[in-house]
Image (tube, rainbow, N blue to C red; front, side, top):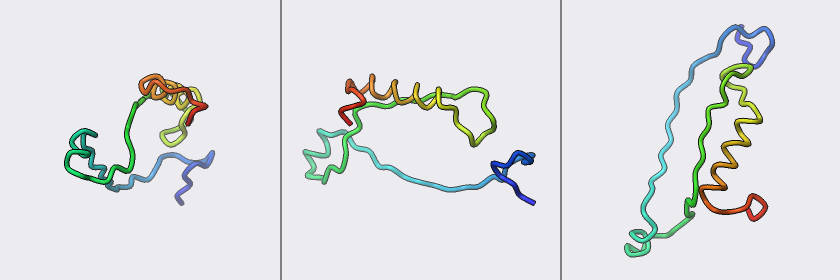
Length: 80
């Protein structure tokens, strides 16, 4: 029996998927007349370290990644 996220779980099931995001510099997109859906102003990454399991992120790690992205973008969280 497969019991993901259960206290009795003893592993996890691997899955596969794919996604694509095509990025272009803003100045190039505007020059080429492309439709601009969004502008990425900042990014943040983090490794949560030891947690309950591979699919259970830790709050502290998520907050740290968000704080890094806000700082990188130069925006305050309450403006988003």
